[in-house]
Amino acid sequence: MTRLRRPLIGLVALFTLAITLDRVGIGRGSDAIGTYVYVIAAVAVTGPLVVGRLRRARPLVIPVFILAAYTAAGTFASAGLASPRSDVYAAATEIGFLVLTSLLSRRVAESLSDIEDTLGEVAFGGSPAVDIESPNAAGEIHAEMARSRRHGRPMSLTVLTPLPVEFDDAVTRATAEVERAVRERYVFGKFSRAVGQQLRRSDLLFEHRASGRLFILSPETDETGTDLLVRRVIDAAGRSGVPAAAGSASFPDQAVGFEGLVAQAEQQLEARLAPPPLRAVNSGAAGR
Image (cartoon, rainbow, N blue to C red; front, side, top):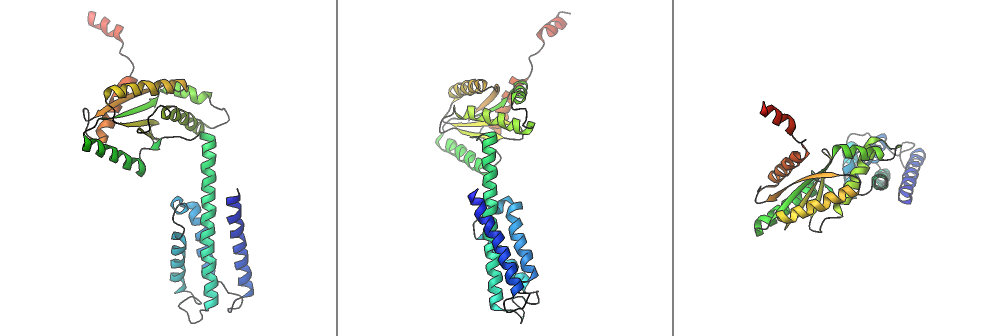
């Protein structure tokens, strides 16, 4: 909380100082800081809070944009930089005010983001899986595929999904006060951690949040090794209270691209999830 408290206090103190200087005047009378400067400062405060990318941007990115906006607005303002009424001391005060505002607002937004992440870890538990649709996942997948092609080494992909009925039961057994979305994320985090604990350091674990499935990319793993891995992770998932099913595919025997591996593994998974045929009915119909 100290990380949030200090920049927040500094931001309030900075605006208070700016308003005080505006009332006292710095060579301009009672209008030392232009109205457009307060508008730009408000954008600097709200921008990092609304736009997630600005929270993790480099420290000088926001000040540079703010100063560019100040320069552009100053060419049209009556007492702006391009005006004969422009005062160097007032301009320096406005620039200092905007730069400090942008730096402090970024610190506040960054601290709030860290608090949200911490609360998420406490509520949901950390998940070792990487979002399979993220840029980091794409880079790791392409690197492993290229390495296997270059060295002619085997690799496998395994797709896991919790069994629907058992997953719903696990969600129902979760804390009653928590909403279903939170409970689902909690159970899925428990599921992914149980699977992640069974993997080797070379294995890559991804998750697809839209479908609720885990993807395990296993370099240097042939079909026999994949079968052992599947049995191990399914047993671990069952012990965690979230039984699962899996389908797998091997490179280059069954597919030569990542999309092909996914299609083959998911086809095998869907076949295992399908209900068994009604043999008694079919045999009775055949007898007739």
